[in-house]
Image (cartoon, rainbow, N blue to C red):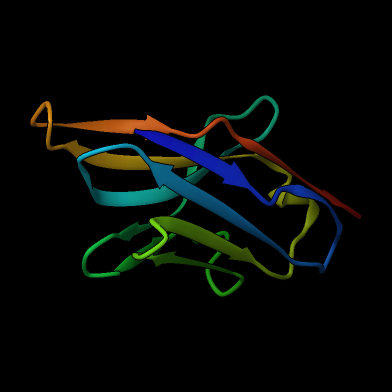
Length: 121
């Protein structure tokens, strides 16, 4: 299973960005997917996650009301719409998937390569 992210970049404070994470591979099913971020000198933290089948979501307090996580089942793609960005949101954002392999019959965590989000003041 491979997770490929896109959509990072440089934006001014108050602006918006949308991140995408596309999953590909063979014979798998997604349990949950989420976005994490890691700022310089800080630990990686959960931003938001989504249960793939039911669509229920969970957000870090710092992004509630500003970020929206969603998914497209047909495209096997997850999104993170980020509005009202501020410099504290600057970080490398990573896509995570907790995915079941039908071939190996096990559940594993998969990570994307990361995409830089920089918010200037």
